[in-house]
Structures are given as C-alpha cells and as structure tokens.
Image 1 (cartoon, rainbow, N blue to C red):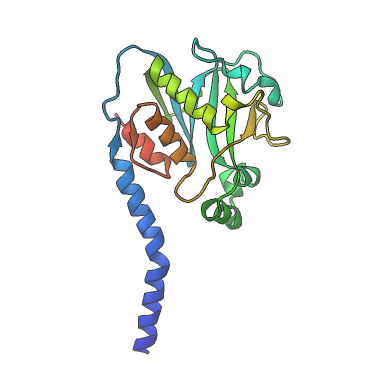
Image 2: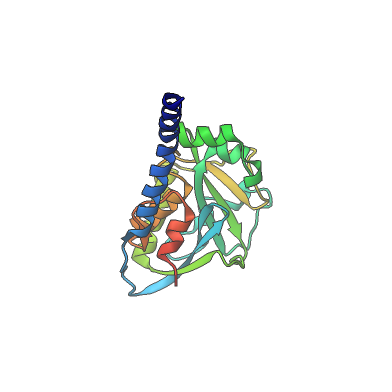
Length: 225
C-alpha cells in the first residue's frame, strides 16, 4: 500500500510540475521590467493597450504622418467597410483557435491543446474603432515618432507586409462587422502567446514591457499607477 502511494505521489508530482514551473516562470518574467525608463521626449502620438478577457490588443491611430494603416489593412476587408474610423486595433494569435473560439465560453480542450503544444498557423486580428472604447482595462501610452516607427515595423513584419504588394484577409472569418484577420508569419505555441506578441511589440519599440509573459497581467503590471 505504501509503495502504491509513493508511485501515486510521484505520478502526481510529474503531472503537476510542468504547469507549476510554467506559472513560476511567467510570474518571474512578468515582474522583471524591460525599458523601464523609456525616452519620454517628444511623445506626440497616443496609443492604447486594451485587455479583453485573457487577450491584449494594441490600439493605434488609423492615420498619422508615419503610416496610413487603412491603406494596408483596408476597411473593405471587413463586413461593414467603415470609413470614419480613428483607431485600429491589432492582436495576434493562433488561427485555428481564432476560428473555433470567438468567445472564451466557446473554449474547447482540443483547440487549446493544439494552440499551446503544436506549432501552427497564426493570424493577425485587426479591428477598426470610431473612438477608443470606454473600459477600465485600457492603458494610454504617449510615444515618440521613433518609438511609433519601430512599433509599425514590428506589426508589418508580423504579416510580412513590407514584401507584399497587397495584404489579403482570411476569407469567411470575422468576429465583428468591422474586423478582419490576416495570415501571420510566426507560430503560436506555449511560450509565444497573444500576450507575448504584444509584450514583444512594446519591447521592440523601446517602450515599457516585462521580460516575458504569456498573460496580459504581466504587461499591465508594468503600467500600473
């Protein structure tokens, strides 16, 4: 009986060790800051971090002197073809997960398992906004032109937009009337989640970020008041 219990506890330890280690790494990576003192001179452009459930989007002005986003990610790619949008949101994730999980209550174990443990096709999700959403899960960041240029480069590289004549949307995939999806270059997996992509975007732009995080809480921790 004692030997059986020992085997059971060993099995339990083996089963629980990986998720515990993952969570510990996420906690450590979340509290270690990167670019903790970004250049705050000439911060002329306002961008936003927007958390929805366990996902984080970056909201940017549609038009600026640096880039006209609607010339690349066109309004006609959406269902409603909005013409007066002031902001566009960007998020990244697993394409199959996007297809099968429009809401978190639609989450299925097999879709989550494939997204986390099997490298697969990813997608960039865009959505047009007439105004910034009213939400407590929103952080405003003022950035310089140089920081914004680096951020745009990061997003464009995600879909290889700089080397394509035209970016085409994923057909028959929409969450809203004003959104669209585009095939992305890199794969989603356990150590590169949607929030890792957002955090990496901030790091690449010279903005405050954490060392590594798979969760939105790590990003927002760096922007706590």
